[in-house]
Amino acid sequence: MRLRSPPAPSYYAASSPEAAEPSRPALAGERRADVAIIGGGIAGCSAALHLAQRGYDVVLLEAHRVGYGASGRSGGQLIFGLAAGQKSLVAQVGRENARRLFDMSVEALDLTQSLIRDHRIDCDYRPNHVHVATKPRHLQELREWEHELHHEYGYASARLLNRNELAEHVRSDSYLGGLIDPRSGHLHPLKYTQGLARAAEAAGAHIFEQTTALRFTEGGEVTVHTERGLVRCRHLALCANAYVGMLSPRLARRILGVGTYIIATRPMDDARARALLPSDAAVADLNWILDYFRLSADRRLLFGGRVSYSALQPPRLAESMRARLVRVFPQAADLEVEYAWGGYLDITMSRAPDFGRLAPNIFYLQGFSGHGMSLTALAGRLVAEALSGTAERFDVIARLPHRDFPGGALLRRPSLVLAMLYYRLKDLL
Image 1 (tube, rainbow, N blue to C red):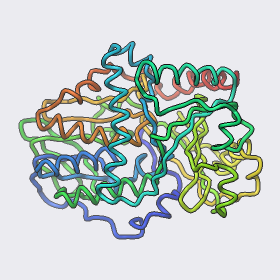
Image 2 (cartoon, rainbow, N blue to C red; image 1 turned 60 degrees about the vertical axis):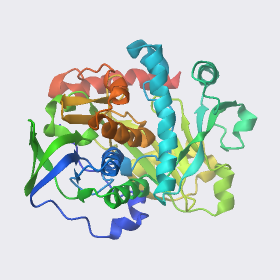
Image 3 (cartoon, rainbow, N blue to C red; image 1 turned 45 degrees about the horizontal axis):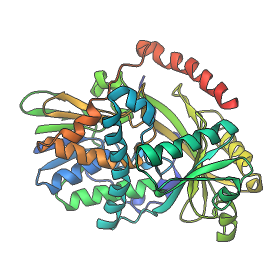
Image 4 (cartoon, rainbow, N blue to C red; image 1 turned 180 degrees about the horizontal axis):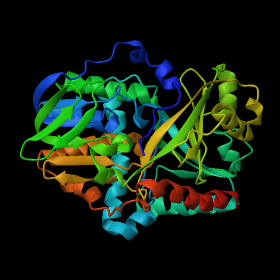
């Protein structure tokens, strides 16, 4: 099934200076490069930056504009760990490699901050993230999680909060406690992605927007065909994620584009904003169909939640999302919603990222499953390492096992919608 465009302009696009500027030129004619990259999200821009810094001639092709996909419209939350969870990773690749994967997720947080600092990217970065418990079993999960982080992974940054301590960060009666991590945080995802693209260009990469990659041919020299031209290159990196589509049916079968949605309220004065989120932390609950929220730099409440596995936008999106917000913050019932938007992120069956090679000189990155804001930047660095001949770290992730979503092209979404009913019911218990 072909994914539709995001249903509405986002607050991020409205508040990003580059959104009003002309797009970069489209590719026309023939180009040669050491490396071609398809996809102008964080992973693609990071790969372009790190490869250009190593001296490679890099061409990046983006079908729309830099940050069009999930990288530029997500919740903007930077969180340690992978979506699959450490116990699942241990079962898949063993304790030693699971520890290496966790350590890489922490490295990704540090890398994000260093990229922002080194390239002077103005993206409203703020520290602190809190996972919150909506029910007693969540509290137990948080206790076990804290113990696992401290004693098995040496990650002492995260600490448990009781209900009174949580009130210093979240003023809502919906939550019983939380796990705060000051090393995690949040940012304006579109400004960040655009900043990475500018840094890549400053390092020598060439970025073409409004340039759809139609197909590629494998070989010692890879050829990427676009609507008005082509790129001949020695290496190719596929970073299209949920939008890989028919470019690689083999990869498309291993991921599913899931709709996720966010609203932004009108701006508040600082006192009222602090009355909702006193420490300016980002927050996410532990439900399968989770709520997540944070403040923007201009003191809007950005509130995300709902998912659509059917590829259809929920009806009355702004109203239904506002109802979720008011359940968490009844004191915000009078806040008007000024923006409502959504789009697709890609998930894998295991919720673990899917990295690998289609050929010795064709790399791919996909399947971040909602934990991609920081991991995507590291993924770009890992591609640059692997392409330069040091693939050990890339291959730790590439060894994660993956399989196609069941049901084929016609039944994979309906079957998943039915499976998700179980998790929706579990959220109620």
